[in-house]
Length: 172
Image (cartoon, rainbow, N blue to C red; front, side, top):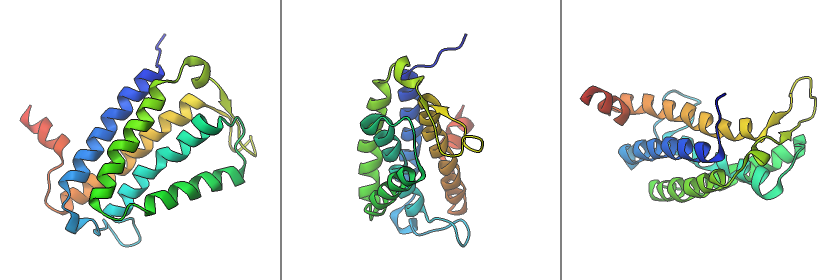
């Protein structure tokens, strides 16, 4: 049996966030307005989104501890997170938030026991949106960040920057 704890979630999230911070640092601020294609997020907008995303999950699972999330709840959580992300106006603010908020979220994950991670959270229209464990939802935060970090790595390539993970692999 494979067993994954809150401490494992925290460790793996810290690794993902460290890699995101590396990319955010390596892209010069004058390129934070670059978009991979029209109608996509800029570097800054992507980093704002990455930074803000864990805040709504932290609120849902940590502060509010909801076991049912209505559409109105979801809208409120996402709205507050989006507003927070938009408040990060430059590279310095994004880097600081990625670091401090990331550690706050990782510490929260670190504190979670099996009793919390195994709790079910349900949604309207269960036939379309089946219930999930808190574990699955919180694991999704890391998956979400990795998805958007991949987009940032494409932009790095467009800017002529070899991503640090590629550099490390080549060095090995």
